Length: 193
Image (tube, rainbow, N blue to C red; front, side, top):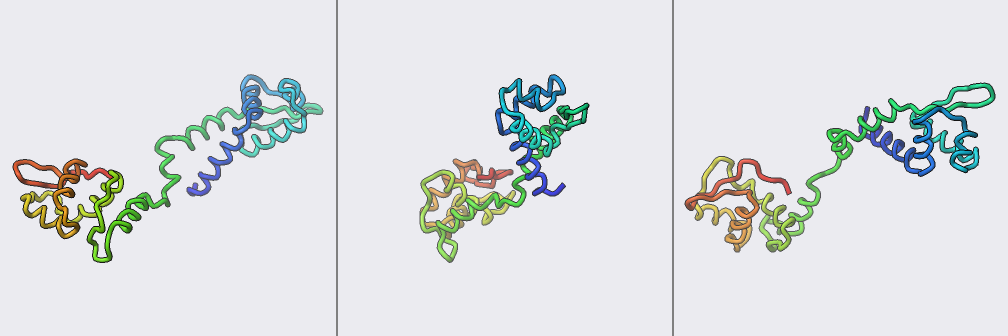
């Protein structure tokens, strides 16, 4: 199923359940099959209102009707309710709904706002979230697995901003770089912002 179709199915599912009377109808039908008139009396709501709610629940596949004499008897499709809940709300399924979203949009905006056309920094951000976006922007200038003496780290960072010491401290404080005995290296798995 396409992502947009799954999102629409999820929206329809929530809309079907987004009414107190529809939830009550689901609760009643979970106990027994009922007619429109029976549900209307139990909920003290007009039969036309109950028919409207049942129509909405039917479109979602949550209830079905069968003819019995002069009445339609409604049944809860418990398996459909359970399968929709499991399928659409599974933790591994939820991230697929934002597949087309640019997850780096915020970081890209921060970098754009804090850099000059030549790639140098206009300023060092004060907010940690923005600082981390800038540090992730700088990080590719360092080779993974390579150890750098402090002097070389300073030279690389100075190409971005004159306050290389603050940038160096922030790389260490955020865990993006490690330091021991005057040597620096990239952390094995840089943390996303």
